[in-house]
Image 1 (cartoon, rainbow, N blue to C red):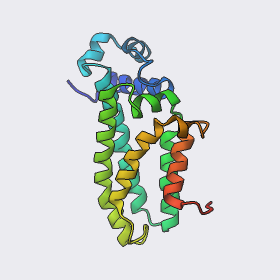
Image 2 (image 1 turned 180 degrees about the vertical axis):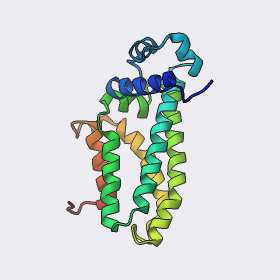
Image 3 (image 1 turned 45 degrees about the horizontal axis):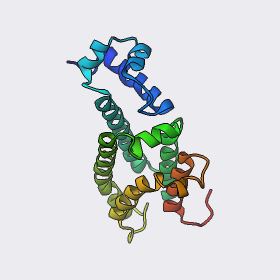
Image 4 (image 1 turned 60 degrees about the vertical axis):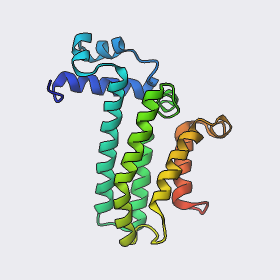
Amino acid sequence: MVKTSKKYGDIITTAKDLFWKHGFKRVSIEEICQKANVSKMTFYKYFPNKIELAKSIFNGVVVEAEKQFKKIMKEDTSADAKIRNLIQLKMDGTNNISPEFLQDFYTGAEPELKTYVEERTRLSWNILIEDFKEAQLNGVFRKDFNPELLIKVQMKLFEILDDKSVTSMFNTKQELIMEFVNLMVYGIRPHK
């Protein structure tokens, strides 16, 4: 099985678009196959089920975000510019994502998927810790900043996204995520 085939790519692209728009639960394998113009047999050649497809998509997105993060950290720009670019990366990553997607992927409509997202996110953060530490040495982040705390706080965001008393304060979960990012980066001081 060659995972770089056109049909594999069509399934991934189509499913990602549908998941981002409608969430995980609402999209069926049949709908993915129809829109990707592939048979169900072809789908099952690459993925045993929809959860494994969603994991593959999420992993691809995380790997790309890690690459972009590393690229930003290596740019020859000021610490402020790096931080602005990191915030923009986060903002771009949440654009075009439906509330259903956030609900399904992050707050547990499907326990196996929620667990995978949490574990993959934790792994990604652990990989990026070294980049944070290097950035501290280069003056991008405070020297007394504890990057490991960021992992713990990020994991709490999953709980916050499931807390209706918090989510009701925002029009969308994307707004809540961006407020969380801005609060982590800037605290309560004004910023550009």
